[in-house]
Image 1 (cartoon, rainbow, N blue to C red):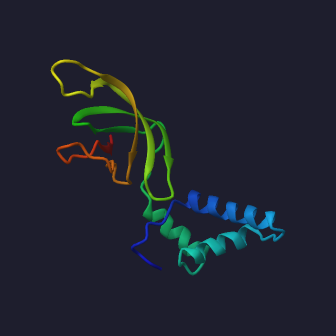
Image 2: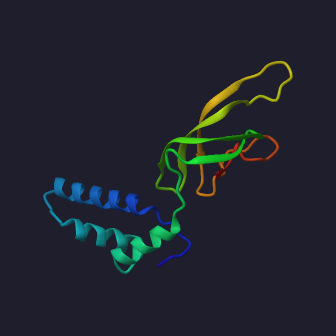
Length: 144
């Protein structure tokens, strides 16, 4: 199996198998759920579903609703909680974070903009792909 490919979570792989079954059924071809799982495993380069499933479990670090987190958003430290989390097929996570205390996300001395909740996209390591003008990620997140 190609070890440089980021394998999605087991749930994402099962969703792919369900979608495959549904698409084939719409074309008049039925396969069992087990056959769909094996097909997905082969598409990911694994010998079988059990092999892929084991590798997926080790490959994914996740974010979950209710999880306590800390980090920096636009350079400002925070502590808060994951309100919503959804993993994309490309390994990124779309998160809604609720801060314990509102933070001022503006660096201007002329005005402020306090936020208690933000929507962000982060990788499995908790860093956003977007960066500020000084090259720092918008979000740097870690489990609290």
